[in-house]
Amino acid sequence: MRIDIITIFPDFFEHIFNFSIIKRAQEKKITNIKIHNLRDYSLNKQKSVDDYQFGGGSGMVMNIQPIYDCIKQLKKERKYDEIIYLTPDGEKLTQTLSNQLSLNKNLIFLCGHYKGIDHRIREHIITKEISIGDYVITGGELAACVLSDAIIRLIPGVISDETSALSDSFQDNLLAPPTYTRPSDFNGWQVPEILLSGDPKKINKWREEQAIKRTKNLRPDLLN
Ligand code: ADE
Image 1 (cartoon, helix red, strand yellow):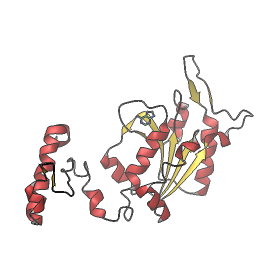
Image 2 (cartoon, protein in one colour; image 1 turned 60 degrees about the horizontal axis):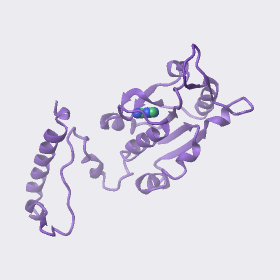
Image 3 (cartoon, protein in one colour; image 1 turned 135 degrees about the vertical axis):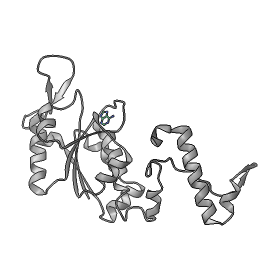
């Protein structure tokens, strides 16, 4: 999968994808993340990418032209499955949506700033708008990182034990059961006996029961 991220802060991404699973996914060439500096596409001397909004009001709006030219250039090079704008008023990111997006080959993520982007980009170019939650962060960059991570880890071959991604919280609309490791007794805090029994059938049943119990207690909305 190739992900092209369009941003006014390319440095933001310098380190963030260079760790652990996402780093390995790139080394294994399962994913290729390319960062594009939107200012490189600005046609004016100052390399500005925003302007005052028509009709007045506080806050700047990102211009059409640099975004249009950047996406036009990318589309000349390959066909994109989705052109995604990260925005708090988009569709809320879920595990289901992450699963769907992980099946794609080429994606563009556009990171917004200020008061957002000229609406004509949303009407004519963007194919999907995604929010990472009902809160506002300072720009789309963090949201693009969250979205990238959520989908890349689901691509076959990225996580060596594939069942591991399948047993994540939310994968079956249930929260994950509790996990433990050595020592089995820490200052008298015991690991549940059943996990030490060596009986996979009983252990799986216990995990299932725990997942349902935790979901009922913590996220009953997921069971509806
Ligand atoms: N940009 C600002 N807030 C955001 C959010 N919650 N999701 C996606 N992009 C955003």
